[in-house]
Length: 335
Image (cartoon, rainbow, N blue to C red; front, side):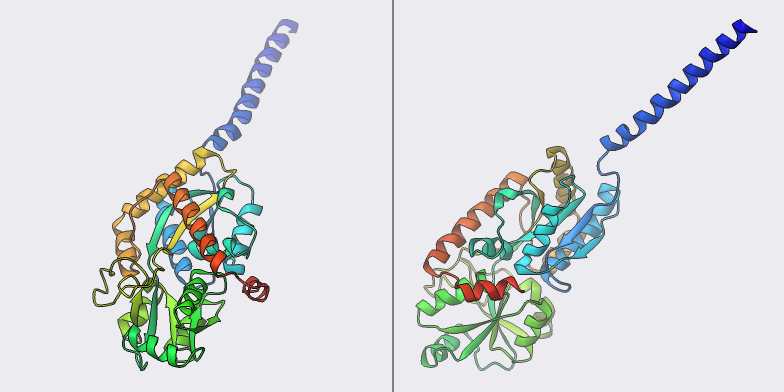
């Protein structure tokens, strides 16, 4: 009996050790798989705008690629910086990603928010488009020349709906002011309010990219009178460019990226970047970007960061000429 008991004890001990080893190895295996649970998508602006549409479409198409749910949460404020602060407050484990767009980068340069390009790793460049000035269907301004003549004869009488101070919108209006085209900046924190102001005639025009107002372009409620770019837009061949008008303000593209904390494991960044590349190549995304006039060539995480860094420096150089006042910064930080 004693011998059998010892043998039984050894057998039971071996079984217990095997179970323990298996139990210990399971979490490690689970940890090796990424992602193994939902990935939160932080949209850094409110519902209905371009960043919101992009973030939600990315989430929808990336979910089956990554094999996990990707719930979307809108965290708006301070030109997108509230959501980016939330991203950097979350654990840098690849389970939180955020929209990071040109508007937010320009705000950093203006001192609105305390972030910089090096705080983030970039999953990919998802969209890019030049901005334009749009007027409503009842506007007396049929061309930019019409608007220019009126603005020069009536300085400060025209009002433009924008996304805020210290942004590409603000820089462009300040630049136009140096050419005698003085237009008042009327900032709106919520995209829907900005669009409604121009469509309803509460402001005389809106500075925006075409994708964000696509529904109003298709309905005829808005139409562009100038595109701020070197070349005419493929979808708006009859719209004059700022370069053609002799306006040297052609290097402020409206881009949108997906980003994570720079502290995120490079392997996780690579996994997300791979998913983003598949999203960009999908027929669903190509249809989406065509409909929002935002299709762009795929960029690697490194190329995306280089684009963001270059844009940040470009905005900084403009703001040395057109600084944002303390009052404007205070106003922008509330939006």
